[in-house]
Image 1: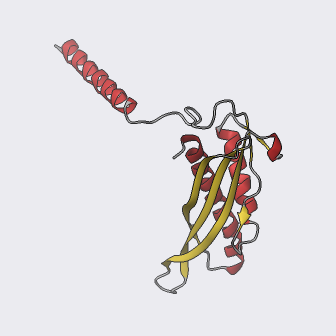
Image 2: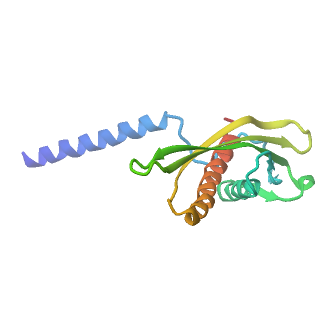
Image 3: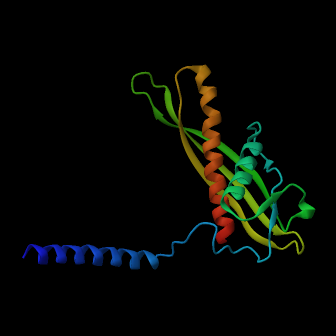
Length: 181
């Protein structure tokens, strides 16, 4: 009898795993970097520095660097500097950046967490035809970060928060471009 119980348990586990794998297969998930909607034959993409329409100093450099890194690490495309040598060119603009107090210290009333919202515009165009391959005129990203009551450490916390946001922004842009979402 114990062998029969063991066989039924193993059969139940195997059936459950099979059911989960069949269900997941139909959910539309796929491996990142595959099934790209970019034109076949593209090998290179130029990513010039994003345009900065904000007063935030050098934010365009941080975001551009993150987008370049994300394309290099997640795709088969080679990123080049010269737009004339590229199959496609990704242009972008940082439209706005806003900070909003999110949480306050109950005893002092000081802000402890800020919410940063960044809006960007992105266009990927075919270098030869100048036709848009991907466009998003208003992408929005939000990131929270903690604020220290020490003024000197506050400025040290801003840069890592922007880098985290740049990474999230870059990941979303690359995913959207590859999937034409």
